[in-house]
Image (cartoon, rainbow, N blue to C red; front, side, top):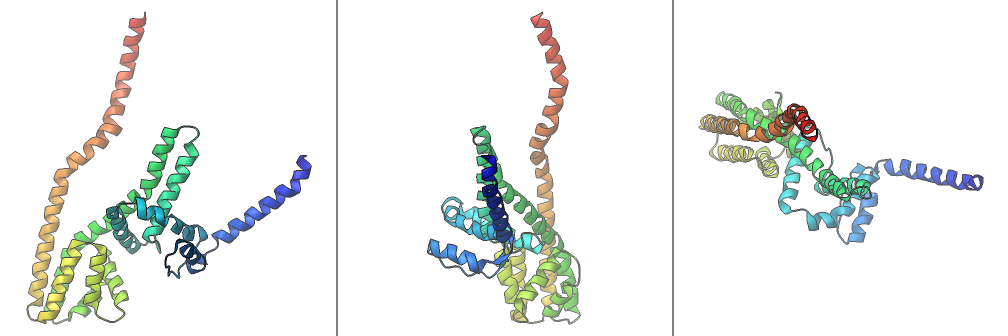
Length: 291
């Protein structure tokens, strides 16, 4: 019986191996995802080359549209923007991200469903929110770095403008320095394609959702309108405001640090210490009472 099943098993394994190799080969999403879009009755225009499993995540779009709150979806768009600036989540979009979260949730829940439904529910929740937490952590690091670097960058630009260097050239020279803000300026210059850099800065600042970058773009637009006269003073005033805001935020975060670490300290240090110290005492008391 087993011998007769041998060829069938070998054929099945060969077919499975061929499917895996084929599906993991990068393929233009327009080849396959357009078919998914046709089935859903929506339009799709995407010419990236991604593996099939990435393209298949678009099938979760109806669930994403129906279940994920709008605020979380907007946050993911902003977080992906900053994560890409740092070199992570390259070419990912919002639908693919939430599709990945749902796929991880389903796999984690199905793996434990038969053994323990409650643990399956917990694992599904962790699988769903873990990518969001990791993405948020990465994006917030970039946002804080830009907030920290902005005042010094503004003072540097103001000093260059004060010696009659035009604003676009001052921004270009800023990209020669290290830092996340310099990377962001370089990104804006690449998207401007030699056109209106200030307008591109405004557009990218709106996409990023960073309030200080929006303030910067607004101030630069004002400088362009007014001309070179007084531009250095405007930039120094903006740098002073940015520095004061950063200092106030740092002081606020320092005050909140005590309450933020209270729960982790209790959970990972105090309670384990209490259990280790109290367990022998409770064991001795129990033995005395039983005897």
